[in-house]
Length: 464
Image (cartoon, rainbow, N blue to C red; front, side, top):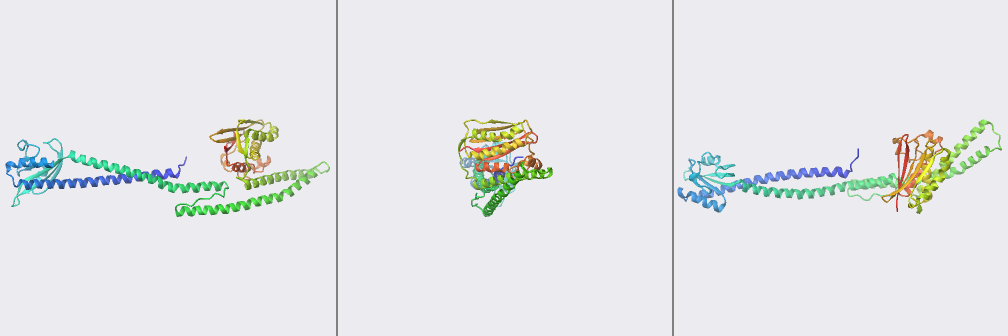
């Protein structure tokens, strides 16, 4: 299962939380503002109705309709005056005589009982949704003289609410957009330092202990960066000590091993008449001293590569000639098993490399391909340029390697099949040398293999 970067794990979560929070706040704001608006509107209608009632005290009953129409026109409000028996005495929008009795209207019933009534419903007279508020008009003895009603069409109210909604939505979108940008910045603030630390860890894994993690913006990550930098310093020191130790020991062992091998070869010459057992023991000593000598040579090569890694001399050269030289050096080994080595490389392909080192890396890969292939097979050497990089592949039709071994192939002395490797004369350092040579060229190497179907080693180098 492909794992997502931490940035794309955090960011959607932040966005979802932000969207939920802004939506909840917007809904709460809308409901609160709507409630305040309706409450304010109701208070306003009560005030208008009472204003009409105060004016109605000064008018005769026959003039109440004229009063309703006059005030209704100036205030854009529908006013209605209703007698205690439900008879409409005046209305700003209709003729009272044409209107039915209003004693069954909920707000009128409350007002005639001395309270303040309100209702929202479809008006049978006007044919539209209305909001009604009715208050009582009392005489000096506290008796209700009229029910005074003020009302507004819901279309006017809805327009106001629509405008309010649009403003809230725009504010929410602007706030949400700003919040999401802040979320991106916040996620970057978390993931960028981790990416920096992860990049440093990859450098350390490649034995690049000179790399340093920069100071981090928060205390915990900065402490982690300092700890990793200190670890890198210690590892660099230990790596230097180890490399020097290996080089010194290898140099010290080189002379006695060479002497032993020389003496054994002398004893194996025809000047000596050994019995069969002695001869067999001398052959074993000669074989093992030769193998030990090969291991020391490889250790010295590794030591030199470690000391010069990143400082190797490079110059432009044709890659085809380097591949051809490597194949020539491996031809004898291949002929012993009747294995063909095929090459496919454009003649014009040029790279800035250390030709002897790349040649040595290819020789190691080709020799391995020959060693671990059955007779009468083919080893292919392919080189091509793509996207500013050069890929060099060594393909064999050999035994193949189980997937569990692939990630450790380039470790020193790691063998997939110890018995077979020793029988074929391997030192366990060849692929480690190849890896160091590729790293010295700031390239990468990978391997793909299927058990029983061969392996493909791919070197990727950047074109300067």
